[in-house]
Image (cartoon, rainbow over all chains, first blue to last red):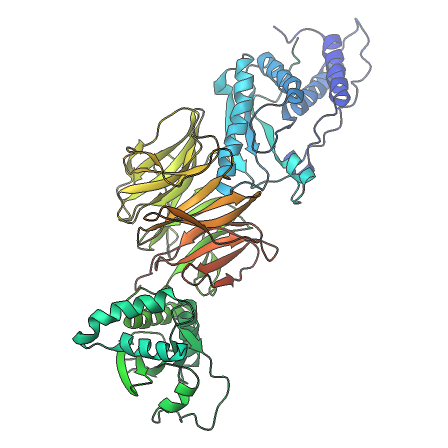
Length: 189
Length: 430
């Protein structure tokens, strides 16, 4: 149904996505997270309006999938000992919800993380609350709850092991991992 | 003066005459609860048992019930080995008691205690202790130390114990109470947390970070390493296991979309998991049983922050246990119920850093034990007076032991870092 829109909208959307991404200063995914670099995907090869070709289709689809996967993976952050979604992160989650709705086979796992300051065991609870906050937000945007796994790593997997405010701010986060249906993603309309 | 009292006290402690028994309790309280009047004790040279002597002397020191006097020189007046004991010489060192360790005819070791004032042996015990004091044999020497403590004070020692903790390789490690024998015990390559001993020391439980993001609770047998997943904990999010005092029950917290609730399981028959706390959107976790097995202390966020609550083991009769001032008192976590049932240890945030507290259940009074650095996750020794906890006061997170009678504190050196310690009960004979 949405697969045959042709290359133009797809390519434009991919560009839009990439542009939106860089414009919004995407959360820098640290190298330890997924091993996948975050730079915006290269623009698709010349997509001449009205002249779609099968080769371009394949390349565009792969690029689109990469771009959308990157957006799904964008990290959100939390204030100290809080599990409230910050206003700045709502558009990030809205975009994930759009992508999830456009790709009904897509399944994700949200992992909640805490900085090192709270109690070790409470931080597992706090990470759980943070992952649930994002899950509930996505569900409120029409994503079926069964497509979202949640887990918590507490303070066990910091992206920055330093003990300072900057590191703590980076470590209080939700990460989003595709665990199924991510081989070929289509952009939301 | 103080030395006179100490000597008299040691004398009375060693007295087994029925007429002295009533006075004994009184004196014992004086020794136990007043720092500075711990009786001086000297461990005599023990030819052929040098390692054993060193271990026992350190164990008695770590018991914090004696002033263990080191023999720093070989004085001319010192008796020759096996010769008659020069009571007067050891009295001049400030000792009230002397401990002699000799090989026993049956292959074990005899510990003989001398009252230096009365100039005679007052008690002795023979234990099947390893004369090399090496490797696994160290634990047999620790048991001898604990028997000496019991003979002298009537109270359990803490030498024949081990601690479990989480190291920075994310594995559960064990370490002897004197800091020897550190070794990883959980499988390599698997991240874990929150180790808990079974009361008989034959197995332990911990939470595991599975690759699929779930958190099963694993039971592992000491020695064989056999592992079993607690029923219903595979495929779900479970944390903070704790054994019941009879070893048959395990309580843990399960995280779900509705909050965090305490669950109980029968880990003798591996069955019968039931939910014990209700309430949506409240978190209840980190349980610890009372020694009579009737109640459980735990952390709940029902008032907003984390504070210390208690309930019956079936989940009824829930109450706030440690009072706090709403909006002022810092978060309180990691409760552990003392083996004598009288005291709860926990940590509470003070000016942003957790500090070790105890709460006397009879006096209903909290007491703060630490103030420098972050100090967290206390766990009681079987004697009900020592606590092991984590502190970063020297830089990285390490284990420390505090004696809550004297406030004497020592560090247990570990490689890497150490977190979430669990102190075993006295470990029985193998």
